Length: 376
Ligand SMILES: *[C@@H]1O[C@H](CO)[C@@H](O)[C@H](O)[C@H]1NC(C)=O
Ligand SMILES: *[C@@H]1O[C@H](CO)[C@@H](O)[C@H](O)[C@H]1NC(C)=O
Ligand SMILES: *[C@@H]1O[C@H](CO)[C@@H](O)[C@H](O)[C@H]1NC(C)=O
Ligand SMILES: *[C@@H]1O[C@H](CO)[C@@H](O)[C@H](O)[C@H]1NC(C)=O
Figure 1 (cartoon, rainbow, N blue to C red):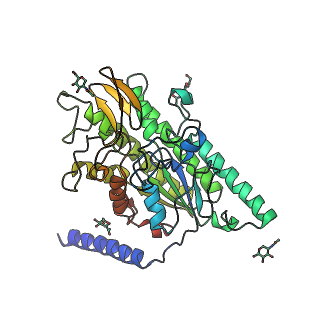
Figure 2 (figure 1 turned 180 degrees about the horizontal axis):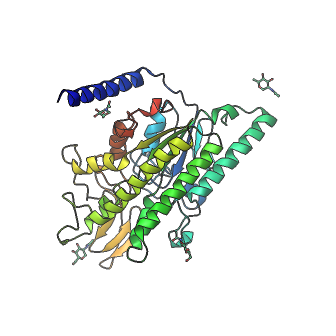
Figure 3 (figure 1 turned 45 degrees about the vertical axis):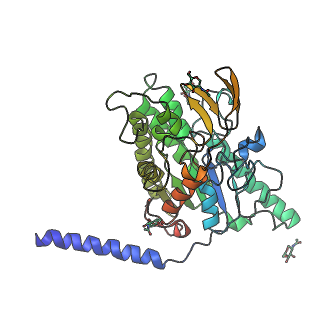
């Protein structure tokens, strides 16, 4: 008994000492952020490359469409603000952009692995390996430009690439594709392969000089409002207490578990790198489970778009319902909704989630983002 409580006490002391030490660590003072991901953190790539976002996207904060799939800011915007930066410009956006404090390579519908689908088929040209290739080019070309023109206003300096924070939020569209092919392929093997591709790209960013990585795992895809909203009279066990589809969340959880193991492996392969794994799934799931208590309507309710009786008109689009053309606009009060358009979160939800993750309470190790270069 005494031995056990002695062990407990000493491990308690170690944890206590560690967290005390973490608090006294100096802030990392990141000079730049480089972000990689999908629509959850796309701040204008798809809008610049293909078609601008339609109103009412952007209505809450930007008061016009701002290249984001939300009524306002995304989690990456709150991360940038927290670290003292202006909004991150999309790498591919050439109008009115500044890359002084980094660049955003994230693009809506992006996947980690190449998909056998074209852009017009819901596929993406901006898979993760293309995003890291774009980063490679960005770094090489800014260095060249800097040397020629001595241009310091618009671009990061060469030595800042190693001191920057590299944030990643991608995988949801790979899981969505795997959900579409359930029964047609070995999902466990596919998920392992997705995670292997993810790890390879982190190694590539490390080879480019990246040292601090802030890695979001994937959210509860089975809780997407468009899915919950259209699941009627489910058989026992199909959904959980919140109405989220269990087998879909199980696939996201399997990805997350394998990702967490991959991060542990990367820590030993890249000993001078700081890799923080952020449990985005739990942060989002906590919000969804406590929607009412946190001041939101039911997580299955959708602010913008028409999604009834199997008919879908996506946010900002027009369509014909019962012979009448309707415009799928937004709800009265987006700040009371978790889901903006059935797939993406509102600014209010993004702020709630960002407030939970920024201080490290969902991170492994539990270090806030401003200190995340000190790990281990
Ligand atoms: C794409 O198709 C090829 C050939 O059928 C297959 O080997 C590959 O695994 C597929 N990729 C994905 C992401 O499904
Ligand atoms: C570049 O700018 C710095 C700082 O303003 C200055 O000291 C340096 O002489 C400049 N170099 C060239 C090549 O113009
Ligand atoms: C369309 O018709 C269905 C069935 O009659 C009804 O439930 C639904 O509310 C109607 N939708 C609109 C937008 O009028
Ligand atoms: C982080 O912030 C959230 C939201 O403000 C708070 O509930 C939580 O206790 C904080 N966690 C830590 C470790 O400071």
